[in-house]
Amino acid sequence: MTHGSKAGPLTRPTRIDRLRKDGSEVLVEATPQECEALAAEFKIPAIRDLVGRFNVSGPSSRLIVTGTVSATVTQVCTVSLDPFESEVSEPVEVVFTDTDILVGTDAEDADIPDPIIGNRIDFGTLAAEFLALGLDPYPRKPWIAFTPVTDEDEAGPLGGLRSLRDREP
Image (cartoon, rainbow, N blue to C red):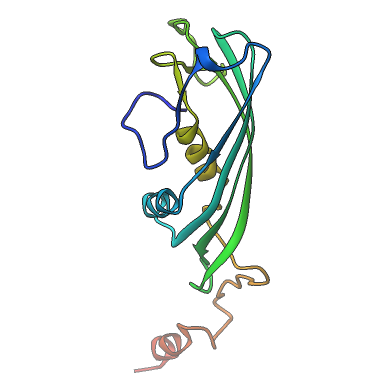
């Protein structure tokens, strides 16, 4: 997931040789400025209390990162267009490796590990990526229901136009 492009607004590169061999815990807490920048990047009104809790285990050539990313986010309801807050808690499970990925592996059939680049893993970028995965692409305020307009519903927003169409000339 964290394949080599430019760093985003939340970055916490960690040298893997500084992690304990018997397992390490890594905590990422985003600052208010980082949350604001991520919200702008994700095109949502706000993010606050973003925390990534990661457990790292395995040999340095193949690290397994598990944990959770949680935050309070403000999104815009796709039905009412009102902003509302919700909690996001996304489980994390990623394998990192420093070995070259086999050529010819079908990416759709294999779970290809993420690369360890420069002897580092960026846990900030990992937290941001899993927060993005946890966002609802069609957010809806609690208790808001979407009722589609049907042709039989003359009182709907197009009811007046339908009556003009059906008038005899």
